[in-house]
Amino acid sequence: LCQGNAVDQFFCEIPQILKLSCSDAYLREVGTLLFSVSLVFGCFVFIVVSYVQIFVVVLRMPSEQGQHKAFSTCLPHLAVVSLFVSTVMFAHLKSPSISSPSLDLAVAVLYSVVPPVLNPLTYSMRNQELKNALRKLM
Image 1: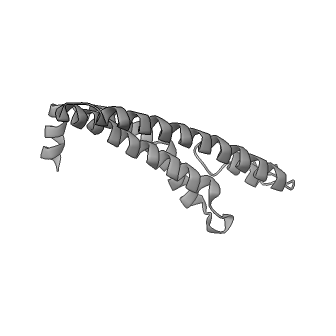
Image 2: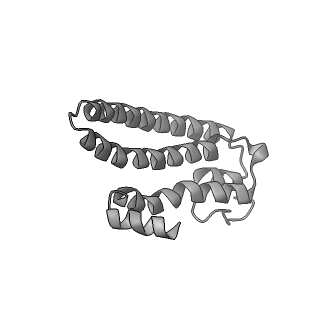
């Protein structure tokens, strides 16, 4: 490391560590990018296939109230997963020319802090007391 050992993030990420490297990191960056894209694509395909199967089963339910309950649980979760996947893809696939420490930090917070914070809210949205409290807050 020729540029010091301070990472411009609140946790170590491979792209941030590669920025500190003195050596030509092109092959490492391409390898990391290919591995990350294949991993994310595999997870994305698994999530899409899972949700298609869930939606098929839910749409076959005879009760409209049961369908509503199932969709009210699945759709907020799908929104959080979409936020996570889209921000991770943006963070790792964006051009270095638009990279700045503040943008990198904001995107890292979006995909590492926001989804776990939203999870309790996502899974408790069926709770009527929480819904009423949110309505009063708004």
